[in-house]
Image (cartoon, rainbow, N blue to C red; front, side, top):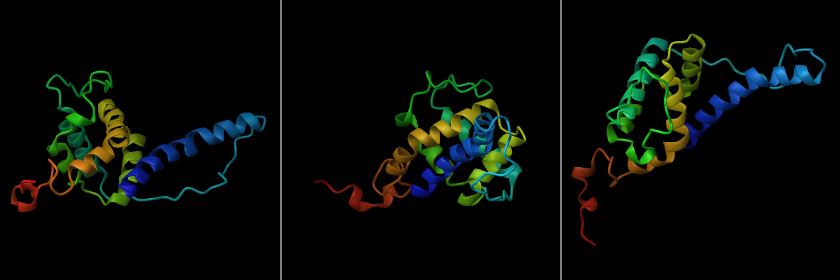
Length: 161
């Protein structure tokens, strides 16, 4: 979960570092836009952008289909979303089917954004899902919790207290 939380922090941090800091520095330094940042940003790869985009769109659709009236052609509406408690096991399990290694999630997400490959719904929903529900998703997928794929086979989960 720390690695996944780091992924989200890097998404937000990279966007702030690459998009906002040069502009802020230019305002402070009298309009001179720095050509390099004080902290270099590593170029990371995304092996399979097409596969990532298809998975991300499918994951967003699966996770957002919590309310039958969710229309993924529209932008994500936080007000009508049911929150983390409505996240289904299918949503949690689909995250595990990602076509790229975990270290490639951020570069693939950034490239998908840069090339305008994600729907507005997906580009808005996935960060909200990860930011607000990651701990909950990890908890309910632990052994003996509701999204434990081996729950039916675990006798210790069904022992009476």
